[in-house]
Length: 233
Image 1: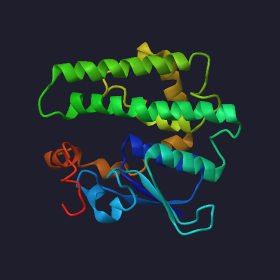
Image 2: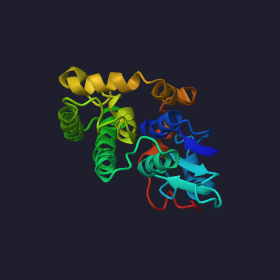
Image 3: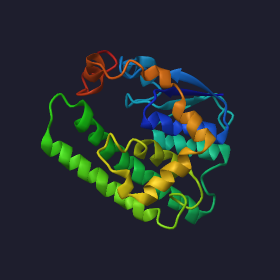
């Protein structure tokens, strides 16, 4: 059994989608990031970066004690290796999937996340930041649109690279993007989104977000420092 420490966000959806696609048994453990549960010492022991998702696998392949993994990209690699699915075994195919997984981790997540922040959550409009991150988001959409020309999926067959990218790009409206400007991405979003496991993973815990982003959550989520996130704080 795998315990999934989760909140319904793009990074959380990556893992709920992967677990559904790989048909691995799991148990949902909500981590309310709007109420600071990611800073609790018991969670910090599993995810030193104070971020969800994280997993704890009670039956790792080495037969040892439960194994915890944090960072969504590392979790996707771990689950793909555990299940033997959605990560090619040949060196070229594996390298291709890894490239696009790292592209999502290094570019798509951080830049689209900043676009979300400055367009939706900043306490006051900051035109330079909005323009900067909306344009960089647009550039990244262009990279993926060119990549998907003549391809059904990001890296050959459907893989963890698609699972990593889809939850971020499905929120294109919040990022200030016109999806009809990226027809290959639009087609890919629809194709991946039609998969039953994606729909189930995307819907996981939807009721958890009903409270929305209130002022308390903004204070908790934004502007943390080393001191404020220390276990003794």
